[in-house]
Image 1 (cartoon, rainbow, N blue to C red):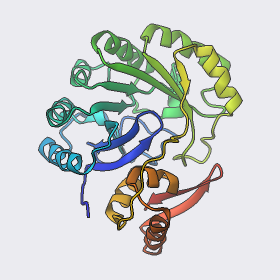
Image 2 (image 1 turned 90 degrees about the horizontal axis):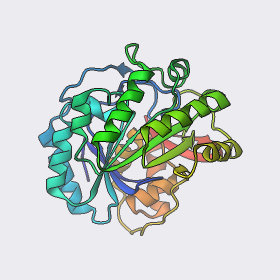
Image 3 (image 1 turned 90 degrees about the vertical axis):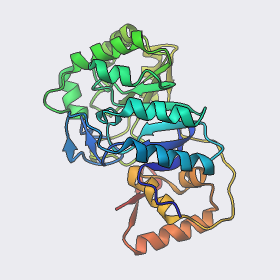
Image 4 (image 1 turned 135 degrees about the vertical axis):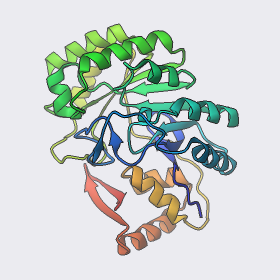
Length: 309
């Protein structure tokens, strides 16, 4: 069985295909406490950059994982907190580059890109995908509940500066919450800001997994299409991961399942794609984990999700 602390997945991603996750931050250490976060409420909100996890330990786990998974589309630095809070993220990216030719993506909330050292640390990544859920301070505080010292104007400036310095793929993600940041004024202001940032792609999304707060509701498909039209040709609505991967008849690794479910709530179909397992064996393992009170299940938007306790 895998006993990894920092590696999870591979995860079926809506944008990155089959992606091996690398979690370089203690759980829920973040600059924000977003109402829609699938990981849950932030209990360690902060801005201090430190080597929270030893780089040598992370790279050792990545090296071992690469021996096991040969079908990866990406290695994604993300997980259960804001990865740029790890002051060694640049060394981690460089170290992974020495191990594999698999593309490296960094999913960040973008809040620290106004810091020159953060921008410098991310330059070696292949893809950087920051978030921008609002462009006015009021909406930013309502949706993302930032650390008190964060200002959306500084964050937008950081996003612009990074565009000039970074030569990889730059994908901006915006998550819309019904009645919060999807109104006409905010969307139009977002459009203007996006034109200044000039990302390669704009991915718009809504609440598709159980959120931190029950009042964080998804935006309708019709409204998402309206927003896509406003943003223009570089904008895509991020869909649900559809690709089917080969499954194998093998013993379910419950530690791998728990590692996944600690980072995000998932459906059985998502776990099947991620872990290449047979449905019946996985269902039996999840039922057993529920009996042990290690996992809970619940319905969200008509789908059954599982999450580690």
